[in-house]
Image (cartoon, rainbow, N blue to C red; front, side, top):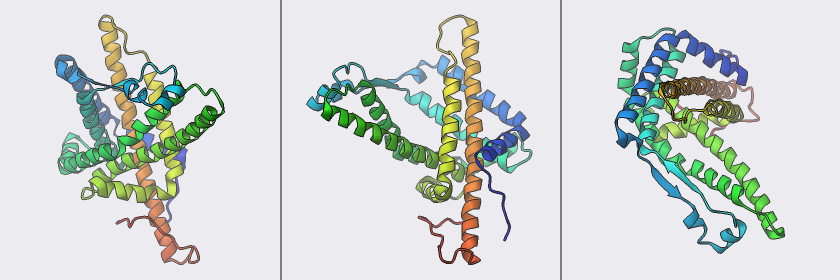
Length: 302
């Protein structure tokens, strides 16, 4: 049986970095071009900058218990930018294709990238829509828990107990949300790597593959969140002259490059999960763990 070296968290991060450096010219050029194009499209077409506002206060204040637990509740709205979200998802799909090509090919050109996108864009788009439909609820629930915890005033024993219970439930929701995000990223990689697998099939396959290494995946989710958070701390909303316009564009390019690295991480993570699954199947076949048979929630095709 062929023995594969098992990569840890640092090993996955290093492997993703090396994969990106091998093809950095075509990857960086493509990402910069796409980011600048989207930036100017939003600037020239005002309809792309339209947003929807969802206000939770009128809904929350209708319940007496919520009014008592959250006496200071006065704002709870967030904005949704549908057109920018769609453009962002398209850029993310481009990043996934670049990440897969970077991990699988030492050198590739624009022609090879376009051929790959032409073969897999439908499947990856279907997977994106499916994950959006299924996984939109998880971040929304997490947002609501965070909103309620922020506004809650735990006065009295009953409200204090409710606050502790809500806090514990929030940590559980964070854990579930991390798993959900992990499945989402892995299923996108699957839809590009395994061209015949997409949509809910890719999601089911991702759930089966990450089963043995989900703690590593959650740790990688934490690393990705930290990178995204650090990038978001740079000021980019100032109104000013040309300098601020250029700075905002540069920050968007940097953010896109970081997202590309994130997809490289999850592409390497997918490969490691698949190796772990195949290693587990091989151990069962060789009788190494005959007393502890290897099982999976889903049959994974090679």
